[in-house]
Amino acid sequence: MGKLIDIYHGSERIIERPAFGEGRKNNDFGIGFYCTENEELAKEWAVSSIKNGFSNHYALDTEYLNVLNLNSPDYTILNWISVLLEHRLFSIKTPVARRAKQYLIDNFSVNVNAYDVIMGYRADDSYFDYAESFINNGISVEQLAKAMRLGKLGEQIVIKSEFAFSNLKYEGFDLAEKDQYYVMRKARDDEANRLYFDMLEEESDGLYIQDIMRGGIKNDDSRIPRNISE
Image (cartoon, rainbow, N blue to C red; front, side, top):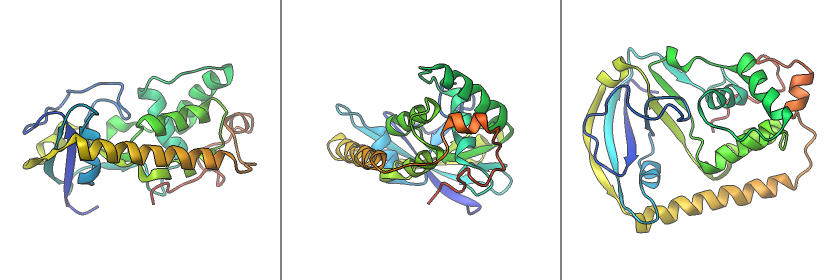
């Protein structure tokens, strides 16, 4: 990441002054301002099937910011999912899933509130479904890591601290037209799901969450996939 980066926030409105402390606590990484370096993705995230949106453009000076990149080799796919488990509302369907949630938080959690900026996958509908399948023992950790790359559904940059908010400079906006970008968003999601179901047809002898718990596997185990970003 360079010192000065361009980021985009997809929204149904124009946001010239993002406010520290606003937002939903049940977002992927908790309260924060959710952006991406990919303007086309921001436009897809901004629209619905019935309403246009806006891609808000900002320059972010990262020189003195403490940045957590969950998609770097320093972290595993289970670090990412443990952060989700602490913030998002998962469907815990089985006793295995209840134990899995606590095990992952206890052994793989990362304190995102200690950082100014967080980088990681965006758990939209498809990604969230894949994560739920994993904690319910439906797919292996190797399949989960592979699923995160299907369809290029997107990575996000989340502005967390008041200091990081002070380093944002508004650069304008662009209209995101629903007739174009909702179609693109749906096509991307459909392609990811198609590839996901194709993957499920393949043989998988990997580690499932029940194996991870039974084996007492920790974050430094070489069998846990790292560097999930392409």
